[in-house]
Amino acid sequence: MLVGKCIVVGVTGGIAAYKVPDLVSKMVGAGADVHVVMTESATAFITPLTLQTISRNPVSVRMFDPPGTWEVRHVSLADRADLVVVVPATANIIGKVSAGIADDLLSTAIMAAKAPVLFVPAMNVHMWENPILQNNIDRLRSFGYTFMEPAAGRLACGYEGRGRLPETESILELICGLFNEKKDFAGTTFLITAGPTREPIDPVRFITNRSTGKMGYGLAEAAVQRGAEVILVSGPVSIPVPGGVTLFSVETAAEMFDVVFENSHKADVIIKAAAVADYRPKHYSSSKIKKGTGDLSLEFERTTDILKYLGENKGEQVLIGFAAETDDLLKNAAAKMQKKNLDLVVANDITVPGAGFGTDTNIIKLIYRDGRIEEPERLPKRELAHLILDRIAGLTDFSIRR
Image (spheres, rainbow, N blue to C red):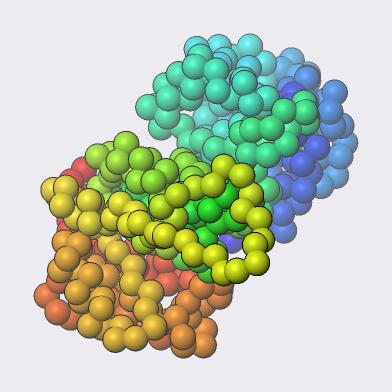
């Protein structure tokens, strides 16, 4: 995937540096020529010898070490790079680059680089949420730098929250995607919903569905690879977050609606791949409902129809809906298109083997506004994601929108 690509990996002084050897090993295994630049702080967490052994190239640390050749080290690295990846990217390096400070080998190499630069931040959750850092990230994004959002979970400092380095597999996927020559959605913004919602009954129980989010996450990953800015609104899932997306994690249909409402105006394309609950318990019990001697009845009420709202307010946006059915697939999908004002419906019969929730493959039918029906063969969901994006690209001229 990375054969013939020269990647400069910048390692800064964060505890997540211990994961970098695994990432470098994966890059080398994918065919990349990897050159590592470390800050002096990074060497307190991991040795240059480790990364030199794994990358099979000398590791650079100090600005004024004798280079051993006539080349100016930071310039030669910058000229050679097809991509610069800063991992982990601390608040310090992000702040320095944002301010135009080049006072060590890594910051100078970034300043001299003409190749794309990817920052993979990892830090304490409060540092990540600091408005100064976020302002620096926004500033660098405006100059064309790329950021991969950190993962959420338990941090090395003991806090819980966003700030963990993403899994190295996810970082590698994003890196490979950045070399994807097909950037037909560059300059466009996608809003994609994925996964199930959960509607609480009491503090212990909830109703949900079998969605795993694989199709929605595959679409988000494919859209990033093809140059789009992606806002991913996800219900509870247990799969890695695609690199390069802006993630909003939600649980209930109401929470998903609120996030979609706040962000839908930013999107050129909206893909509603989430399996959103149509009903929720009308009354929530703040205490666990105890088992009684008789039956239990629950009363349900409708949730807000997110797709209907989007269809009524979409304007020039391209709106894609999903229809997972067990009966009358084409009839129900066509009705959804008309009722929700959709441009394309991705329909599938979840009773068919190899399709539906939890599988790595899917069998879909694409229903267009003009009545056309396309029936692709069964494909892995990641391949189907690109096929669906190909069809979305054919619905409008995105170059005019840009």
